[in-house]
Image (tube, rainbow, N blue to C red):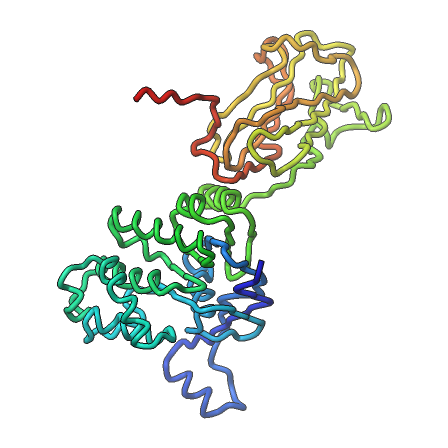
Length: 408
């Protein structure tokens, strides 16, 4: 596959001035005081876009999405780094961008064609398809300054996707169209993708990214947070927007009052000084912190017992969302599993062979109890966490086995 867009160590910085006069002062007195502060909009981006890729660009407002697209289209120049474009670009960055407000829709079609490098004769051959796609009636002959935002979107889309571009860039333009128009645009974009057009697609609607794009790039504070298969990246982004940044450490050596008071006993096993402590959780480890639905995951729990024997001893492992929505929580008593309950260190593995959860971040609680969970010996809340991220397979929290029967 040929590389259509190559980005390497791309940086874009702006000089921010507190007052307009400060810019003049700095230009007049170059060797004197600096009157600006630097704002880094993009900071060292590196990625390649292959021919035929549909790349979703995700990120909060201010993350650098529009700045990146404007540099790819040549509206902005990089401060440093390399940017190589192979092919003709059609872009919809802002409603009305590239339009002359005094010109009619027809005149703006020819104007945009000229800006993209087409001759008038070449645009003559495309004009009927563009007008038909825009479907704004006689407004096509009226000055665009009287257009609604929806009309702008229709005309801009009609021009961009009917001129056979090598690269199509769409920045949130679908958000202003009605549902029928959005469907028409997506269908046309699918046809372009099938025919080899490379597409960069910015949308806050992650379901559109999942369903239309094959890859995605997540920008955060001007850097690439992560990139990869669109469904997986969209899952991670959605989860971040719900819960924010989290500590993903899963190999946790637990510390609490009981552990701090321990004295050496038998190797790594440490008996507590406090006689009231009957048992404690020593360590919890996950076999993996990132997985896909239907993969296996193991929770290895190491616990210490400080009595010769504890009757009714049981272990529970529960799954929650970071917002403390309870997902699932079996324990060894309910499932008739005999647990080691004598003095010393013990290790148990809780395994889910086919994880049914769909995309998201989930936390693990671990607890040890006696008497059917009535008495709590030790409990660790959200002691570790894992993320599930997939190609787009379904929506919701669980994948439930099901079947479809078409009657007629």
